[in-house]
Image: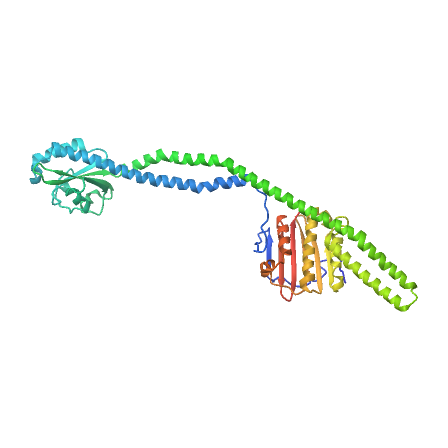
Length: 470
């Protein structure tokens, strides 16, 4: 094994060029989250959840306002039409009772004058602005608009139904395209018509025209009456639900905190168990085997027979190799010097496990790494451990480089190998096949606010970069 601990980054050439290799990234800094990575557990903010709940009600509030406005307009239109029918009914009956006679059919001036006086003195008002009386053939027999007198306008279906007695009365928004409404210009009106009869039984059509402003004014009045009720009821409902939203958010936060405590307890328990197992192996089996190998070595020197000496030497050699393997396993289980001697020493022990595979390694660790907090040191070590485990299991690399760079804002671990490489976009498939090491590591790094970037190309190598905030 060749270790280049003291080689600086600017002096040593890059192990492999992966600048244009496919990338899978996770975590902060705007990196995209691949499908194989779990989502980070962000702390639950009660204020944010309540604000989100309140904002979610805004579209509903706007919808309530719009529906109330539309309903007010529709109801206002119906009320205005009903009022127009009532006003037209009264005007028609009063005209029929007090002013109408058969003389209207032949244009009698006296009859016309009586009707005109009644209409102008008692019928016309601010909203009712025009009256017409049609003969059975559609000819205008009377109107307060002199330009319409004597003109003949064809009846529509509703007007014919009223004139024929099938309908008592009808009202509608005036059709400005009709010839009889040409004198109104672009002014939209509400028209109502009712059947009246002369003393000799001739049916006539009494028609009144109302300003359309009555419709909009009625709608506005209803809007002013009902909008505060509808909006107020919704706001009261929102205010009543806010305490429930706060309680729910607090329960969610409490549940998350409990899960985090359980997870931390599990991690601590696992760490303690690994430490106990490593300590028991180191102080027990490893020491015993070391003692046996030393005894075999000493015994081989005084053995009388050559064959016995060879067996003892071979056994001692195999036991020492087994001890080395056990020590490497102990490093994997629990690094005894990670916190006592520092990250550099622990990473060097990890690289030492590649000795039997004749892999050339290099290690660079900034001096400021000793200032990193315990959690960051542990996560960087676990990241390097997982990356090197993948190198050992899959990469078949000849060279491996590990570097730790520390700045004022972040710590960066880079593990580069010149092995077989792979397609980073197949990580989801690898995770489904049971290769969950990177998946678990991605979750831990993301929870710490960090990011993982994996660059790899088949036949070239792989580079794993882990970035943690300080």
